[in-house]
Image (cartoon, rainbow, N blue to C red; front, side):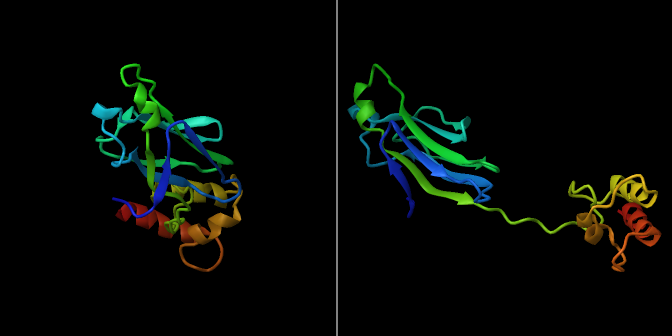
Length: 178
């Protein structure tokens, strides 16, 4: 049981303009509503699809009323349009299914995920402070790599507002002691 969501009949497409909203994820629990007739009485047989712009990023198996719902968690970063589509299965042995595909997108939501705090010294932003980060600072100090403004707070290990040999030494010590 879910408190919120979107209910739709089969052969329905819902379109959401998400351009410029910075959503990163769409999530929902999908399935056929438990109030729909079961398969012995022409219960719905539906396929759920999620489109990011014109690309299918999720397609469910054929779902019926008594199937467990499926949790979907899809990356929609950079999307302009999200389409939620439910189509009947067109099963010739169950022609009534096209009338009873009561589709639920339960607890459906678009999410903006919070940015994680940067790891001190993690210049390449791979989630760890390691020898690759030390090598990048060496290249910056040698003038072989341009220092980007976003690197300064991450690479400035001693907090003096600049990147120098002292920061490099502190990073090397951290890497060696890990």
